[in-house]
Length: 408
Image (cartoon, rainbow, N blue to C red):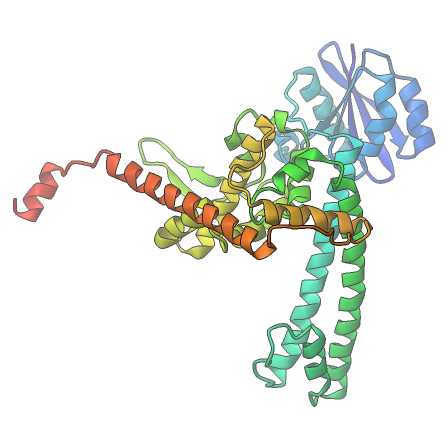
């Protein structure tokens, strides 16, 4: 068995082979399908190949995989032997990868199936479009600030009424062109986001796990798709804590010697798109009645509303792990709101609008009110549970120094 390391670049791959405990260089291979296929045919069926997870690594691995025993994608940030090497060249990196694979010390990157990779690309593209939209809006807002136009009289200055108000402002030629160009860019970006949303909906409508996550308050198809794109296979995570750490919502921990451990900000590892979507879902979930709102208020009273939003996002991840592992829907879901989200998902895929069926039906307002009352009861039960739990906690006893200081 040979262990082959590839240091991948855009145009070529540096090849090193570890055999018999020693790595040697084996030349370069062009990063082209024909050249990679010819190189793959020269490998043995029991060979193992390792390469860093870069932009073109998956395409290269797809070509090599049918001809070798295993293709391993190494986590580029965790290959410390390469990152901390004093001498760093393509040849050294390839030999180091081959030796790490021979010693079974390669930090692996999980590569999902084609459906998961497609969803990841769609979620990433949507996030980039949203960021571009935000930059354009900030540029227009900066024009208003520079020209002392004050606070707009409406909430959304990029809607119909807001655009009419922007058209009436007296601005310089360059500033007017900046505003008009920004509005044209917003129209284009919104259209592109709509197309991406439609493609995501087409992928999500036949995905049972995404539909299950949408039963959680505040989680729509965008959030559920971003979360499933990051998770892929829930069996990869043995506990909720592993999933929380994978998504970067766990606090940093520092401890040395006999000092007490100190917890800092969240690590922000993993998918930034999923983390951002979960935070937005957390703000939405705490607006309505339910246990999540009670939890957010309890944390917000001690740490502030922004820390509470991150805590709720972490709670959503833990909840998602339990739902996906057990194959169950959210126990405190509001069926009317869930049906509305699922119907919106169907409409995004091009489904026709349904006509109202004749016959006696329960008024929608009454049904929503009943579901809201049940959610409030669940929230009240959660508050009572937390209160009883806090009362049952053992209270720390005062030390002798504290008793002397208090005069008792």
